[in-house]
Amino acid sequence: MRVHRQDLLENFQKGEKQNILIVAEAYYPLIGGATVVADNLAKEYAKTCNVAVITGDCRYEDKAEYPVIRCTGIGQGSNGTLPLPALDGKFKRLMRKLPIDAVHIHSYFGLAKFAVRLAKKRGIPVVIHGHSQLYNEYITIVHMKWLAKLLHKRAIRLFNRADEVLAVSETLANIYRSTGCKTPVRVMRNATEFTYLDHPAKIAAVREKYAVPEDKPLLLYLGRLAAECKNLDFLLDALAAAANAGTEYRMLFVGGGPDAARLQNRAAELGLSERTLFLGDVADREEREALYQMSDLFLFPSVRDSSPLVKHEAASQGTPMLCISGTSVSEDVKDGENGFTAENSVVAYAKRIGEILSDKETLRRVGENARETLGVSWEVPAKQCLHLFGRLAAQPPRQSESVWKKLRSAKKQPSK
Image 1 (cartoon, rainbow, N blue to C red):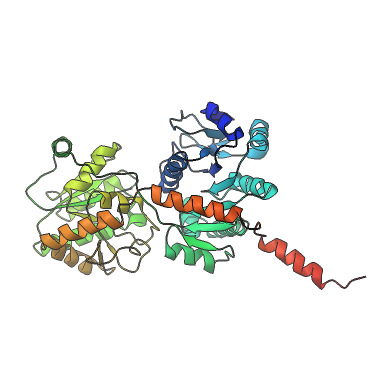
Image 2: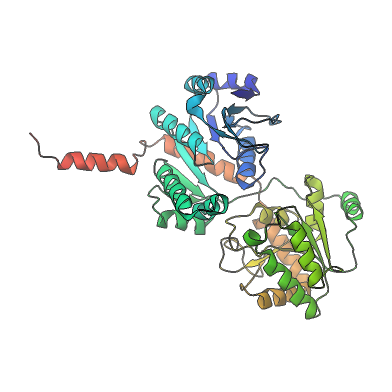
């Protein structure tokens, strides 16, 4: 076990503030949606509460301003460790001594199960935050249907031991309900730590650094270059169709991933080399803000994402998104009001790009609305979560379905 900012754990003993424990088996140095959500909620909680994150140990020096407790486990390379709390005596002793008022879980494996047991033993609220369509995520990782189904069932069983489940979209909430989740599920939408970059000189410097042209309308995709997950072959086909229809544009692809080289080659095969720039990963936050802001339209045709953080990042800079209608991504996007949608068709998506770029006034107005409605800060969901913890703490602990079954069964037994 390793503890970052152990000095701050002393505040948990004072009883002056609410003590929140965040469980995140996917955490830095691994970069992903669950990591970013857990980190930003921890930062917001820390403004009014004591907060600590528990995760797996690895060769990574934490930089957070809140305590991070790393549990020993099985090494998984540079991206982290699969925590095994049962084998870490120091970790278990620390958890037994640490006063906790609520547990907020962002994962579904051994550390999450440990945290649920801890919360149930102490009679404190435990909430599980669902970030993905479980089966689809597992099948991508393990590539075996039977194992993905098993992991899915185990995750749902864990959900049913929580007091409440948070889903990042209504689509995701319905998936959890339809696959066996009996725990109340509420939608808790994502937000962003990005703020509007009101600095023309910095934006100009980023444009110059990456040689981004100014002569044509600018389109942007920012995210992982994983074609199957993000529907990027569809996007290239739509860009080619838009070009053939006479739409003038320049396109930026920002990010890395397993399909980066192949997608760049395919863009060349489609005759898009003069129109597209592949910038690779851009880690600096201000540079990303600048790239969003200098772009006219953010293209995100994924049909598998639940609630992409990039939607809110783009909106924070007044850049609206064009997504696929009827998807989880499009739930809070009102076409022509705070974003744009198109049918899941290359022809329809390409046509919509041309229509949007031809109406500058609508594009400006929709961008302003996107910034106001989708570019919200993490302060909003954090306050909602803290209110939820307080409400759950004030009501009797929720019994899991299995416990209720035992009680009903006992009542049916004939009295002796």
